[in-house]
Image 1 (cartoon, rainbow, N blue to C red):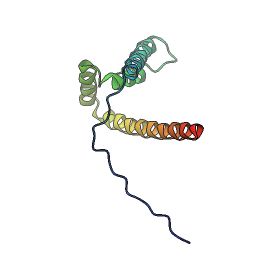
Image 2: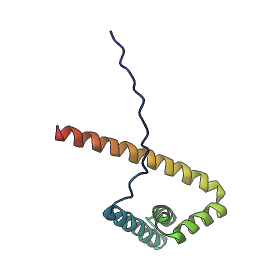
Image 3: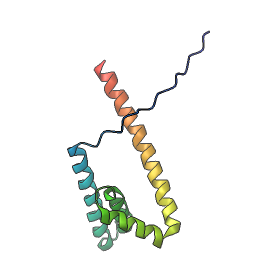
Image 4: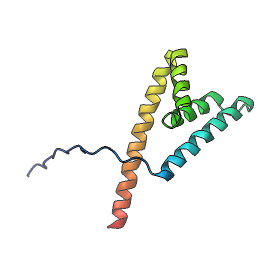
Length: 112
């Protein structure tokens, strides 16, 4: 039985495309939505205010300089939690990558 060959993939030499206008707007809208949920969470006992604020700031950090400064301040103020934030970001990125692959695979199968 012949072995299946594993071919090396060539990395892309071109820089990644910038996100579309609609993707950027959706990202900003989601970030502000999480920030509003975080503010509401300080007054409502069933929402975790700080968690939603941190997620909203993390989403908006690429779009706004003040959000990046807040993230940096939180890292300096709470260094123990900065490690957890990094791990959470890595897990979210891995989940998003897996989800994108599934969607692409499904779309490819539907087109065939």
